[in-house]
Length: 498
Ligand code: BG6
Image (cartoon, rainbow, N blue to C red):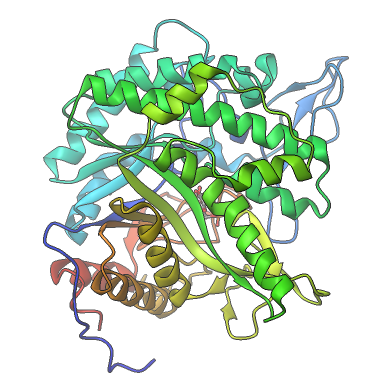
């Protein structure tokens, strides 16, 4: 790794919000404590990069059924269930529910200005459809936010991070049902009211574009798949827009953002057909959601997309008003990789963050096959800022990798440092080119249970957690080399990347 670029131009503005990010279901554990209800992740087993996560259930006769892949429909009459003899990694997470004070002290030691975390919906509303929240859940997060403030760390709160209460999935059919808008809005209103003054920065839905982006991973999605994805997304857009309006009414200081799974799409060849396909990939995967949430209406291309797939959306006049009145204050996104789009035969497919595409010969890939493309981050930032001219935060970015603990307990994760160094340089260049980038929270600043595979060995953290994929270990925390490195980066406001 050449050192010449280590002292960079440091264009990061004063007050830049350096920090890290996690999600409740991936770190908290305590899945059935203090009145928390179940979410889908609680009935989902661990997998690997080659073996999908599975969901457990009891069949219509009350007997344990054959596991099914996450995302498949349950057999007729079956119910999701936690069964004996299976290990569910999200049940324990990394025990942040009980260890948040220790974790926040470590974040402070690194100099974090901001910590992105999410609120588990089923901690506040056990079933999801109650009128009143669960007091124990409300009080837990109050203590969490107070503790962050004590450490001078600004919370950035994701209201929904993949964890719709299981009852809403089973009894109401999940987000395909318009009723969920009402339940979500009640949940979000409780968050804005209870944590007024403690939290100012909010994200309504994590990676809201996943349902539509994910369609391509099915190979040949049907018109029904498109219909379902577009309708459920429409419900989430309306829920988000209503939440934005309520959040602003409760506290004008609230800054509320969208959160998009940011993939930089490139044409696989210079065939004009690929160039056009690439443009359409941006429209479907990235702009479709960003435009509604930032501009307040569907882009023109949405009509083409609906027509191509025979989608007939149920949209009311009131929905359109809500979308127009509930635009977000900032654009936030995750960034891990780019993908190639081509109309030509693909020999080597790579799977990534809720996306797949042709392998790019100019990139290197992680052990989980995710491409390493820091230039893609600069491209994405410049493209998006030019489109919306809203403040931007990169709220997820990181490298999932195997870590080795040496005999003396040290962990030399220079691969992670190199990954971050290049991505921070890319952000720096984008700022120099005029992008109003205001914050950066690396993904899994402390090791977390992977969302995609359920593994803990796919580690992202600056902080190592002693737990394995069967849940064995002390849960003790220790500092990796990257911990000390990131501390220096923050202290120098992005100047010292050596
Ligand atoms: C994003 C999610 O998709 O990517 C996170 O918002 C997730 O929840 C992250 O953990 C990394 O993906 P994975 O599959 O490596 O955990």
